[in-house]
Every structure is written in C-alpha cells, then in structure tokens.
Image (cartoon, rainbow, N blue to C red):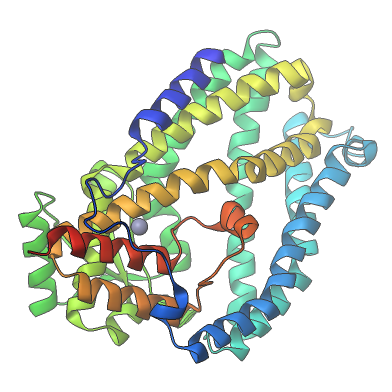
Length: 399
Ligand SMILES: [Zn+2]
C-alpha cells in the first residue's frame, strides 16, 4: 500500500502542472477581479441564483453523507442485511447494494427537486418533470451497475482469498478504473445524451485544421444534445486511445461565435495533447488500489460478508468526499494548463476572454467563491482567474 501511495504521490507531484503559465509576466501578474470582468447586474443575478440553490445543494450533500454513515457505521444496515440470511450470498449482496443505493437516492430526491425548481426559475433547466424523473432513474441504474461490479469483484476475492485478497483486489480495482475510463464515452455517456458528428462546414474544417496543426489529429468532432437538459454551454474530451473524443454541446454552438467555439475546442485539445484523461485515469487507478489495501487493513476478511455492504458503501461515499479537495486541486491546475494551451494555439486572448465570459454567464457560474466552496467544489479555476491568466498571457506576448 505504501508503494502504491508513493507511486500516486510521485505522479501527482511530477505530472500536475503547478505552474500552468510558464515564464515571467512583465509588470506582474493580473489579479482576478469579477467586478472588472462582469457588470453589477450579472454579478447580482449569479449571487441571487447561488443564494437560492446552495442551501439545497449543500443539504443534499450532507444528508447523503449522514445517511450513508448512519446505515454503514451503525449496526442498522448490517441488521437489515441479516434479514436476507436465508438467501444465497450473491442475492444478499445484490439486494443489499440495490437497497442501500436506493435509500441514498431517495433521501437526495427532495433536495434535488428543489434544486431543479431553482434551475428552472433562472432559466438554466430546459427539462420537464418527466425528463427529470427519467434522469433520476438512469443515474440510479448507472450508479447501481458500477457499485455492484466493484463490490462483487472485491467481495468475491475476499471470500476466495481471506488473507491475501488485497493483492488481487488492488489489481482488479486498478483494472476496473482503467477499463471504466476507456469505456465511459461509449458505454455511459450515451445513456444520458445523443451524439452526432458536427456537420461539414467552416467550423468543422477549422477545428480539424487546428487539431492537425496541434499534432492532435481528430477523425471527428461530436455534438451532444445538452439542450435537452440545460441552457449552459460546455465541451469536453473523454476516453483515451481509440475511445478518445472531442464533444461540443449544442448549446455552445447555438449561442457562441465560431471564433469562441474554436477557443473552447483549443482548450479541449490541450487536454488531449497533455494526455490529461489517461494520466488522471492512472492516478485514479493507483489511488483506488491503495484504497483497497487500506480497506483490508481496516476491515480484513469482514469485507467478504454480505452484511458489510452498507459499511463498504458508506466508506466509499465518505472517502470520495474526503479526497475531493485534492482531486479538485489537481484538476484546477490541469484545467489552467489547458487554458494556456488554448491561448498558445489560438493566440487570441480577446476571444478567449469573451468565451470565458459567455460560458460563465450562460452557466451562472460562481464568480467570487468563498475559499471553503472553492476548495470543496471547484474543479476549474474561477472565471475571473481564467481571465486574469489570459491577461497575463497577453502581457507576455505584447511587443
Ligand atoms: Zn477542461
């Protein structure tokens, strides 16, 4: 376990771009300043939105953690699973997993529904309740399949090798992370969205030409039907190797100028160029392997028993939240490097700044996050930080 943790730490220390924009900034670095980038009305609207949605979002998070702990870390969950004693082990595990995850989904629903109401009030959601319920069902199904696969593999290994299961489980856990990340774009993403190729035209030609210039040749550019849920604009890369893909949301194409879309695509090419998905996946695999060794040290062969399912789910839920400040810290630096790449590739800081503004306004992004929220939830630098970096780039390249 120490070796795995060392490997993970070494990868994070060496591969995280701690200085995403290298070099000296003449006249000193620009300071992030929301008041300079946005109008008072834009800031007021974003503040009103967060004042309304944040209590429900935080409530959902804390109730989820508390209920997971209540069923997993007290005898309640184990007692409930013991009611299934007469059934076969595998049936007990499946029913206990489906039940625990259903309970966690159920307690989150009142909060999630209130969040949806706020999203609609601010024009961010385009869904009706039928669509919302269908998403609840799909998320539950995807989460259940994922949790079941992991639990069945780990618990079956613990049953088969009571003293040595951590060794096999670490390998299996790492393989599941790598296989899952590879398959994610083709297996999970289509559950939630439809994808089609960006039609032939100037924009497609320009993106493919830019990718070729960047030595990241693309076979295709995909468009996701994000507008079925939201008015917010986004883009992403996922997968690696043969499953790697660049996806633009239809909301982005509908509202932004082709130049802005090009800057956003350039950011995504930065992720591709730096193998961010692959590196993140390998780091995740090492962390999961180390986590499974820690699980062995904490619970030993108890992991094999069906009555441990609530305990394992609670441990996973709380550990996931506990490591999020670290994963967010890494992610923010990786995102800033992708921004620097977009600036280097397009050499167009003015359009970059305009695109950042449009994205923040369309998504009602938090422009002045408190430090606690920033540490816990921000996977990207704040928009004023991203704009400040573009200004730094501009100063570096002014003659
Ligand atoms: Zn990104």
